[in-house]
Structure formats: structure tokens, C-alpha cells
Length: 63
Image (cartoon, rainbow, N blue to C red):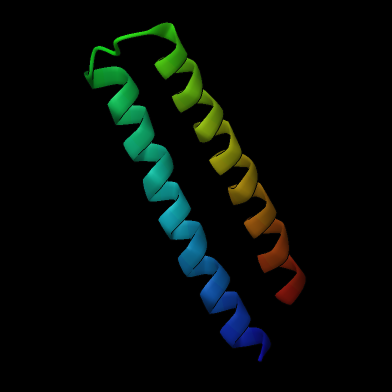
């Protein structure tokens, strides 16, 4: 089971990393209508980064 859990967590981490990069590209390429939109995207990006950190910790517990 730990190997399966590690694989699943790694897949989730990969998906989160893709989302973080997509948000980065969106912030850098699209002119946002308001500073509230930028703040919202930065907040979401920070939450995703924390999630990635938590996934890394979880993966390390299974290794």
C-alpha cells in the first residue's frame, strides 16, 4: 500500500505543479481587469504552493 500511496501522492503533486505554472503564465500574460483579480490569483497560487509542500511531506512519510 505505501508504494501505491506514494504513486498517487506524486501524481497529485505533478498536477498541482502544473496548476501553479498555469497560474503563473496567466498572471504574466493576461492583463487583469482589477487588482482584486491579481490578488485572487496570487492567493490561489499560494494555497497551491502550500498544498504542494504538504504533498511532499506526505510522500516523504511513505518513503
